[in-house]
Image 1 (cartoon, rainbow, N blue to C red):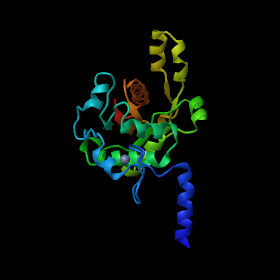
Image 2 (image 1 turned 90 degrees about the vertical axis):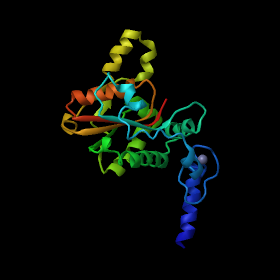
Image 3 (image 1 turned 180 degrees about the vertical axis):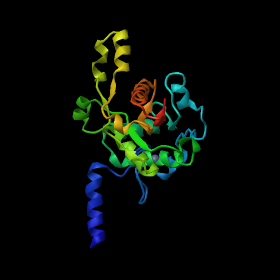
Image 4 (image 1 turned 120 degrees about the vertical axis):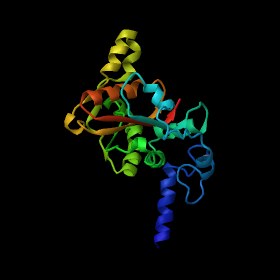
Length: 232
Ligand SMILES: [Zn+2]
């Protein structure tokens, strides 16, 4: 009886998430979750979690005090990594967020560089964007990291005050000013003295994560760590 219900539920679930690999599009076999075994074995991993001055760390070096940083994959256009990020960003794929977040966190938790993480915070979306999209893709990932690290997931203390979609109407200086006040810590009590792992889906210029980190340090957090699924 249970197996019938199970199959029924699985078929129902597949209406929303067809069981294909989010990276290569091939059919998933039983037991494969979101990303097929072949992709898991051959995705462009950075394997950078043991290297202090890796590519992700260097993005922030000299801009903001970061304890350690890591990205799971190297990003390339029209690649399997881009496909995975697309599923995460536009299809509210909660299970994929968990899979990617925990995959990366398993690696990070073996590195001494990330030994002290006690709070996980996703880069927040502006409330307007949240309303439009219905979820924050960085928060889907953050859940996976927090589970592996047994760390507190905090989605409340840091908020986004500026909607970046209005940025194109501003001049360069205004945009610069704007970046500096894009985030606000509304509950310093939860931040002060904490070792915080900041999560974003992809790091390009790093300016969004940088302004989050600056705000957290201003609010008195002890150490900032950064993790993302991909680095461009
Ligand atoms: Zn695949």
